[in-house]
Image (cartoon, rainbow, N blue to C red; front, side):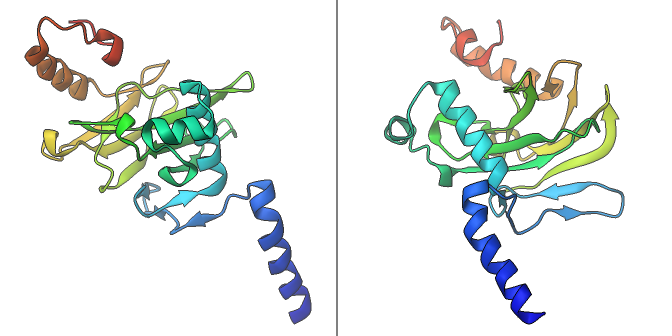
Length: 199
């Protein structure tokens, strides 16, 4: 029996890097009420991180070397995990890219990827969070998708926000209002191409 166990461990060690097994460092915490607590600065899931990394390369239209030279984006700077947000049996990818390209005064951009027609689409709209604080997947749902609680950056005094699904994407109205207030300091500049927000 001991030999079989050792052989199984060797099999996992050899095949997981090739097959992209969902190996997780520091498992997320599931609370008694079903809330899942996740810390991107300490946790990552191999398969989910690979999916997000490939999505970023495609979105930027860059090769791995170009992405690294452009904004130090490498597989090691991506932290993500799989979770079924809408109960359809297909897991979404939620994660972050630790790169200055996806960082600003409001924090890091949160990515939520949903698979549609064999392609992943980002369904997170302007969700910026503090990466050294936890993110919570709540049991409460809006339009059949679980709500997500997260913290803004120091620019938001680490304020807690709830992102809800509006039938197309995850948004947080309060955070968008704060962005609009912030944009007032940039009057005369067309920032809509970067933020998607019209003044």
